[in-house]
Each structure stands twice: as structure tokens, then as C-alpha cells.
Figure 1 (tube, rainbow, N blue to C red):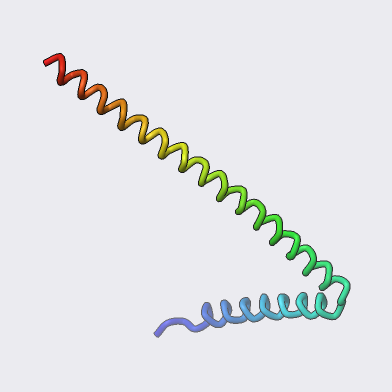
Figure 2: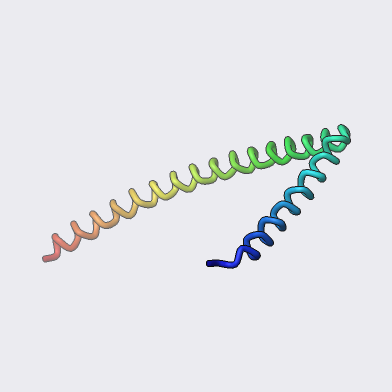
Length: 89
């Protein structure tokens, strides 16, 4: 039979962490100004992340357009080389 002590110790440690997290949450919730500041910071972070995402998507679209253009140019160049080689042989 396995030793239950390690499992009990892990459970006790998890409960201790949970209690600490709950205490911290209750302290923040008890201070409305702190809670408002935290919410404002989260809203600001979300806005910054949304802006960064929009910029990244715009860059991705521009890069995709360039890649499409380069692919078309490369395909045309390959066709020209094949035609030139075909004429020489």
C-alpha cells in the first residue's frame, strides 16, 4: 500500500496556498479603491493588447500581400527562363 503522507502533505500545501490567495482577494475586495485601480489597470492592459494585435494583423496582411507579389514575380521569372531554355534547345 502506498504511503498517504506525501499526498496529505501536497493537499495541505495546496490548501495553504488557496487560503493565502483567498485572503489576498478578500483584502483587495475590502478596499474598493484598490479594486477600482486593479480593474482600470486591466482595462488599460486590454486596450494596449488590442492595439498591438491590430497592428500585428495589419503587418501580417501587408507581409502576405508582399509574399503574394513576390510569388507571382518568381513564377513569371521561372516561366521566362523555361521559355528561354526551350528556345535555345
